[in-house]
Image 1 (cartoon, one colour):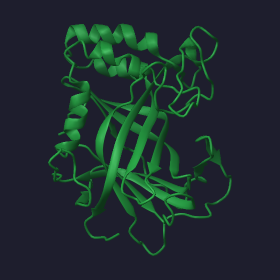
Image 2 (cartoon, one colour):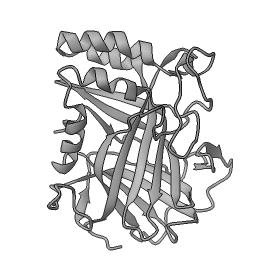
Image 3 (cartoon, one colour):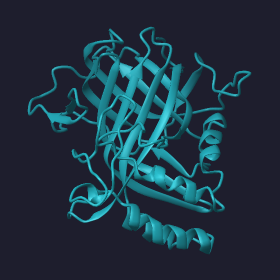
Image 4 (spheres, helix red, strand yellow):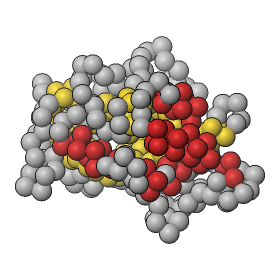
Length: 300
């Protein structure tokens, strides 16, 4: 049973031989369509990859206009201007402008309601084994620079072993979750120890007793790999559809105070344009730390 208030639940069909040409991440993290068949893909010998499991998971918060994330709409917006739905963007700790992370502005309001444990529940779901997000890097030869890497992004099942610090221990084995589809990204690149890939995901939004499934547009994952492969620090960024969230919320008996808050605040803070050009998308950023792991049936 899944309990986090906002938990990324991957949901994408595997990219097969008939799939369109994959999109690789360029230096700015934007998706670039090569227009050609991939020059590197899944290893033909079915060799196991380098597996990481998320050990810590939370929301990227904004402090003094600085936060981790990605520039999802390609513009650096200021309050009231004609871009970014008039919502101000922030910069990341490396000085990159245009970072979209409007959900961070909602956290104080949510934490003042019955959803006060929103951040704690997210981490609790990890250590309880209810949300074991995994990244398997196939064909990885160099953790600093590698032009030919494939990524399998999914979930695992099993009760994780915890250390004395209460965190998921590195180096343990898990079983791939047979119930969850995975995202496969071929021909990604590691540049300067950083791997970025794009994809369409589904976010499981659970508010009190409501279990919502909201598609994420412009999904982007960034992994910063330790040179020795001992850890990966990352961020998952995307846009949530405000109309879909409100539609789903109305189906459940959520506390009226929380429901009224969401109806009022969500449209007001939307910072991304949807397919029709209307400002009805809300950017959200998860931050995580992942540690090495294994899947049963394979060795690294």
